[in-house]
Image 1 (cartoon, rainbow, N blue to C red):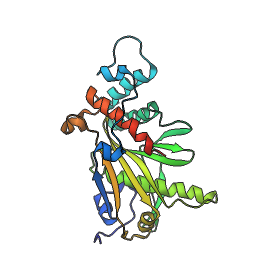
Image 2: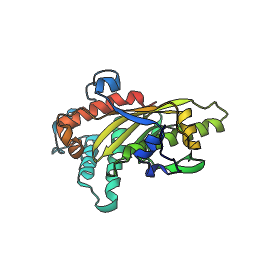
Image 3: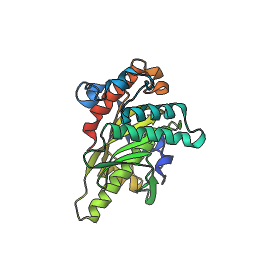
Image 4: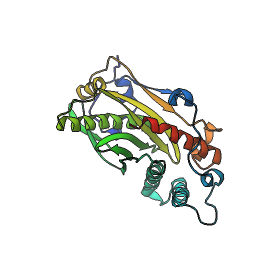
Length: 257
């Protein structure tokens, strides 16, 4: 049992301490173990897979916007506090480009989601979400170099689970007892993928400041690019990195339910 004493904190203040106190661990997997099958072929066209930068001449709207959002997120444009927005914009565009908003879904940015921790109402603020109706099904957190992005993403999944069940309760429906949320952490233009199981047992423990008797294991996938040491700095700029990330994005859609 953890000796860390829990206190009510917003999701943006979660750290590894909260994960230890709540019996949550993160397990890194290879692509086949994470997705259940080898990576599929990329579903984007050849323009994005054969050009590091935008080529001359006329190209499709999606291709044009990809190169622009990639450049802005890579260069931190606009400068200053708005640089975070460029990464969020790039992540939101990628999800739309890959049809994560189909058939009747929507991509939102910077929503606030409430949940109960240690008997008090707190909130989490994912940078980007995908919603199916009023239900949260995918969460994106930008890594702001705090070393706590994973804990923050997990807090957002707890908040999303709580919000989904509050809506079910308002409609007179039975609560869901568990759900695996799809999650992405963006460091610049480099996404890392997560499957985050949230259960009623875990949410109850968080609300009551208790140690859950059963552990929660979050699955993590860093795209298997050729040079992992440079991936977080280079992101989707190198063509081989880009191809593999697009393959991961195509495979990850199966978990967005």
